[in-house]
Image 1 (cartoon, helix red, strand yellow):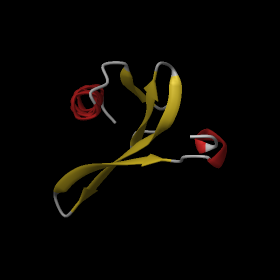
Image 2 (cartoon, one colour):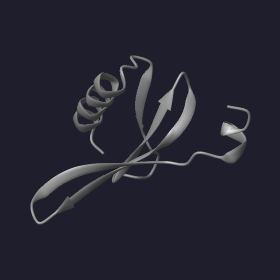
Image 3 (cartoon, helix red, strand yellow):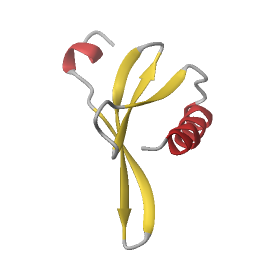
Length: 71
């Protein structure tokens, strides 16, 4: 993803999740995706999807059972 695209998606996600600590970072050697972090903790990957002239981004996040135990 390009830097201006990353900035726009990061602003959208910060506003949507009400989390100014959220960061979208470029991935080394990948131009179709970026990584999402909060307070330097990896959350997931956001993928750029351009199909039939329409552009969208898909956020993928895994939640491990050990992360939700005891909640």
